[in-house]
Image (tube, rainbow, N blue to C red; front, side, top):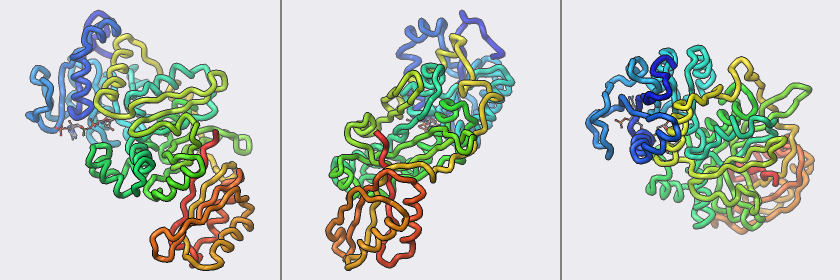
Length: 441
Ligand SMILES: NC(=O)c1ccc[n+]([C@@H]2O[C@H](COP(=O)([O-])OP(=O)(O)OC[C@H]3O[C@@H](n4cnc5c(N)ncnc54)[C@H](OP(=O)(O)O)[C@@H]3O)[C@@H](O)[C@H]2O)c1
């Protein structure tokens, strides 16, 4: 950092964005001021702020801070050591400010997963070039110190797998559907009314938000270049109340799972990253993660399985993560943002999961007429998919449609894909089949 690096003088910060998280940070810095100064070895002081509306009542006092209409100007102020970006958006003003701050040798703390997933590598290079800290604990799983956990706690391990529940909105919806028996659309509206889902919930329910976070975790966990574009993403929109009931009867819950691992393909390590709803056996640590909670499992070759769990969003938990980053910077305890220097990060190509094996839950909605079941099971046989159990449910909507659900034995994913291809265009099917993998124990 260029300025005010003395450890006895305060760490001077500028905050861009005074919304949920920005206000949370100001509150936390005020409430825990002495404790933070003691732990950081010096005070952390807000010097300047920026947001869209200067005179909005935000419930906290901001009048004593310098105000910048153009938030990019925060990155050029001589009286600022660290810029805290709490605006959001992968590009636009958040990215312009972040670039300006690092270029000017200032530290950057951000909660912006979209920006880090898309531009993390570029920002890490800029931070390295400037010798400035870049930290983003709050970008993944809110208040859970999972970035720190992977960067520091498991740093001696080769990780075999990182996976978890990274989106509180989806988790709330799925666990509510489980609790109430209501369908997706109804539960989403309720979640919006309660503030657990945004007015535009697309990023959450389509799995994109979880994919942003997964790309960041995978980069840290596997020493890989951030590769958001390669995350195979499926959201939860297709999950019906009937699937949840079926999963329950079979001893599972349904959760949106983000998972990453590295495996050799023909002697070359490849990175698998995917976000998809999965069946999780009751008794698995992730099965009891309910409501807006997040949880991450990391499996290290010496640490064994580690579980990080807590609030994945909200002003308090997210501010807690932002200020923890600031305390690290105040202590001069900063390392490479993605756990190793950028030139050490590997460009791992995306894995082709087809040869991998898993058990799968398949749900078909079909016409209520003879021969349909035989047609489906014949496709399974021809694609070498072995069926472990099969359930045919009564008329779901009373309109001559029935639901056929099955669980396969463990087998290659490619075989299930082939079976579905054989059934494509079949007049017996009344909708797209749903394929939900079963998370291994
Ligand atoms: N909320 C959470 O629980 C949570 C959890 C983890 C990570 N995050 C991340 O934290 C960041 C902030 O989230 P948030 O929930 O605090 O958002 P928010 O409540 O919508 O607040 C955004 C703030 O940015 C300001 N802003 C937006 N566009 C701007 C522009 N063009 N120029 C200047 N200021 C602008 C807004 O100003 P006005 O107030 O004047 O409109 C507002 O103060 C996002 O990256 C988000 O993904 C949030």
